[in-house]
Length: 422
Image (cartoon, rainbow, N blue to C red; front, side, top):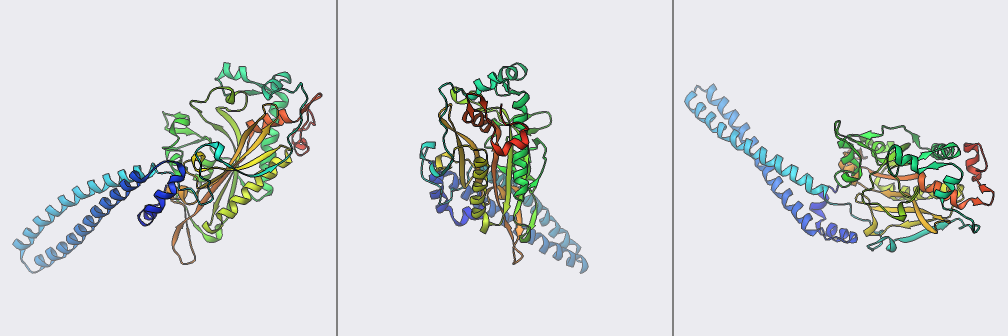
């Protein structure tokens, strides 16, 4: 959520910056400014009433002390009028504050200067590439056929037991999943991340804190009886650990990682692009989260991208890094890099990670602050990234590493799988 002080001071720059998202937010921003002005006016009225009430209380006390009871009682009648004015003003102030908060929730983050202008994924900029696209034999299969051939993943059983997008993993397919999770967690630990096992459901405050609510409410599974949400990503519980926290500058950088299943309704997704592991309602992912000093956050973002690149290199997968254009960015992000792997059997790029800097957007919602050297409280920067999401990694591993004898396991994974080939 954008800070109201920033909107007051930089209204025109914010309106101009948001144009990168290909939407004109001028009307909404102007409405926020007007609502804020009305709220501040009522707030001043309340302050004036409070000052007048204090003045009259002293005056009444002095009148009683001087034995002027009639005058004191007359003055008390005036204070009753003030109390009524105060009650009306408080109701108005609360309504305006609520209206202002709702309006602020509707405004996305302002893209940073590095964000390319564009409307669709075709306008994203390729920032880096790595690995080699393999030449597959003519008999090469897509991962859903490989999964069936080697009894690794059962999509039909998932439909039977739950529904589409909830597959079963068997034998070496299950062991490959577990191997990837452990490999990713060990890599994160070795790079200084604190491993956390968080809850897989969160409350409404947590959803608002990281920006899933109200923007993505329809994409989350909601447990209505308890008013809990199944997490769409570990970003939500991991970042909310620092909600309502005041840090010291010496606490930076904060680096946490966690494995969780992720649950997404993916409403409206259908067709060939969702076949097999390409898009699931439940999937496994290891997430990395940084809480950072504002002066270091973009340096940290670059380091996070390099870290995810290294994971893909160890998995021997061809990849590319995309700097997302304004029209393809998420609601809360100031700058996002997507990392994609090439699926040789499907002949397409598959997104496996998004790494984003949110600047102060989440921290403002979370009330996540730090005390600077002058003793002032300032908002921290938050960042996160997938490191990595498993489904499309598994799809690319199966497809790209297949040969006439089966599927070869990358060398870095063998200590975790316990086998070199499927």
